[in-house]
Image (tube, rainbow, N blue to C red):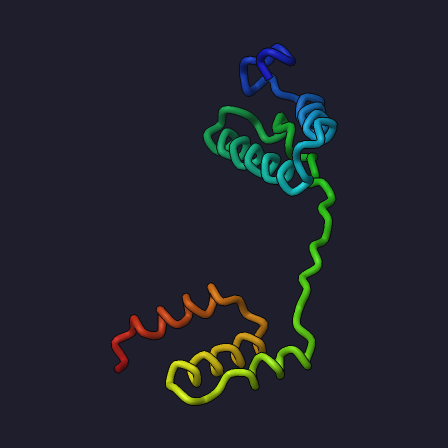
Amino acid sequence: MRDELGISEVEDVQLIHIKKFIQNRQQLGNEKPITINNKIATLKVFLNYLMDEEFIEEMSNPLRRIKSLKEEKRVIVTFNDEEVKRIINGVKEETYSNIRDKIISIMLFDTGDEYQSFVALESRIFQRDTF
C-alpha cells in the first residue's frame, strides 16, 4: 500500500483503501472470493488487535463496515442408499478387521461424520484410563 497509495502508517488506512484493495484482487482474477475473504478476515483480526492495544480507535477502523464477499456454495456429492448398501454388504465378515471396518463404515454413513472426527473420537476414548 505504501507504493500504490502512499500510505505508510496504519492509522492512515481508510475505507476507500480497503475497497480498492478488494476491487484490485477481484480484477486480477487470480483469487476466488473465499481467498479474498480470508485476507479480509486476517486484516480484521489485525485491526481488532490494534484497537485492543489502543493504536487506533474503533470508529477509525476501516474494516468495521466491510462485509465478506459472496462465495459459491459447494455441493458435496454423496452416496445414494443403494450405493451405501452395496458398500456395506461388500465387506465380508470373515476377520476381525473386516467386521471392525464394516462397523466403522456403518457408523460413518449413519452419522454423516468425517473420518477425521471419528479418529479424534477414537483416540479420546482410548486415552481414558477406564479399561
